[in-house]
Image 1: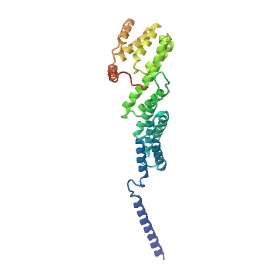
Image 2: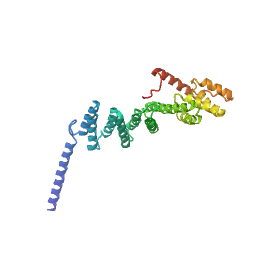
Image 3: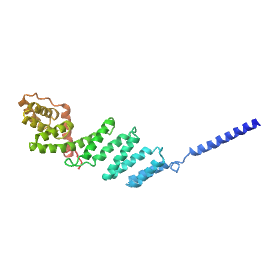
Image 4: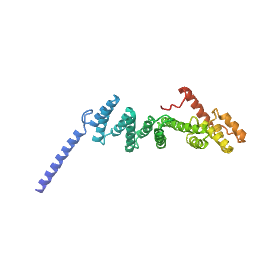
Length: 291
């Protein structure tokens, strides 16, 4: 009797294993492009909607994919596509929502290569909302902060040249706004107010297109107050860091007058200014600041 019971148990185990194997084979043999791959179908349909500008419908499909298939291989692509759709849709509401979605992507997928792209896009969303230099600087300040974050977190990204260019354009806007206010005070002999803004501007934005003018104004302010040694520092900076400036000759004359040695021009500064002049000539002038 004991032997018969053991044989019966082994038969049951054997039958159970066969049944399990059959089920696994059925489960492991999906037919491509059918309901066996619903996440792929959802992603394909949604991206097709996006291509044709049906952003709301496309996002609905992608959100369904994310909520229904949290382990899908298309999860990261879906989240990034949602962010891109808001960015492409544009407008204040769309751009602001794209920032939320890009940052959400970075939080969930910080180690993917696409994280650097998402961070750049956060900066670009603010960049597209920037005002002119004489308007509100809120978006420009946020653009600068996000692009600086990109530089710090992704120094080796192939997107870095694009980020650097947009950062410089953003800083041009910020510097121009401060320069306009400083010049207003300078022309009205409000030297204390002008000087404070000019010092911050020249230290923070040395690549500003009118940094040579800002340094010249600082030299003038200190010279008028008979602080020639301090004035000489700013004239020396023009000769060294802005050697192709139309003010370089006048700055050298000031240094000679004060008995201060004339510094040699920085070769890197010469190359930078030559490139800037070539780029400006090719683009018709200016830094490409957004309107």
